[in-house]
Length: 454
Image (tube, rainbow, N blue to C red; front, side, top):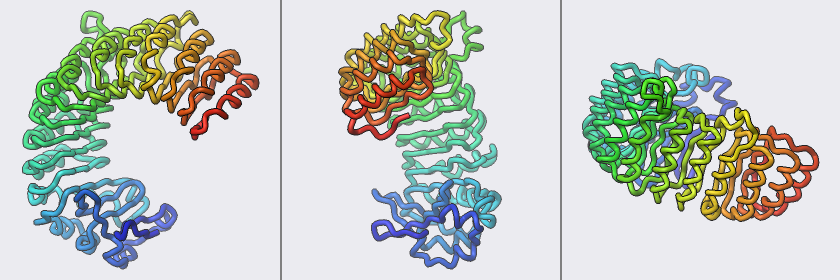
């Protein structure tokens, strides 16, 4: 279970051995050299990193202190000028390592946080994801690492951060003027938490990516963030807001009937951040009005490469507006699956066909296209097949859970034989039978790079 990598050692306890109950004594008996690993580019982990695969990465001088207890481990961090990256995760340790369970790990995190001030001159990467922080813990974190002015990557995903916790994180960010990456995904910041972050983010002029998916952020929170990003974060490339409430119909009803009153605020982000590349607004209920707003704004974004609008209650009329995305000359990945086209009363999806006709310029750039669960029938599949015939760059196509018949499958087969770059194709839960399957199988023989087929 112990393997050497490039002359340096990395420890790994296999699932089978771990389930039998590896004891701390057995772990302590291993030579210190087996527990050391230096990361490339001067990223050195000093301390414990335990993730769900039970990797333990630490410098050899800290292994005995780690096993002796959290306080001794914390003291091993003092004066550690070489520390560049501190990562601590907890994942089912109580089940797989009974003597290093949740209580031990929580004590270890608390003890290490209390020494944060000693790392202020060198720490550039702090990742404390998947921990259950109380408000007191977050306050301790903010005060302990307030002096880490060189911090450029902060990840606190899945740490139970609330709106009050966001206030403490904001106080930490005010000193991190060189921050490039902020990940607070899978928490409960809400609008109040997003507004608290907005004031601090304005000072992070080097910010390249901000990830806030699954945080119950609505229109008010989005507006505050967008204003700050447009004013102070000209280098922003990625904004992830998937799984939030920026187009919640309950908020829309209180705003003069508009589906997404807050999306217009993103215009300043697209104009001010000239290198903006990735936008994730999946699962946000943006509806047709939001799709129309985005299509018009994004058509001006010359650098956009990835767009996620899946599961957004967009109908056939909204898809017609998305034809404007054909002006995004560098668009490579597009997700539109699981919208409400499959609930349409009429099977005539003219908007979808109009959208596909508008994408003619994307044939040379689009690498990944997700159109699953849209209710596509024979006319739409025929239009898609005409587009695919010259989509030479396409590597991934998802058409699951549509209404593709044998005739639609035959049309696809004639086009797919020209998609030599295709690597994955998803066609499950459609309506074609043996005739369509046979034609598709023969066509895919002309796709030598195909690695995944469903």
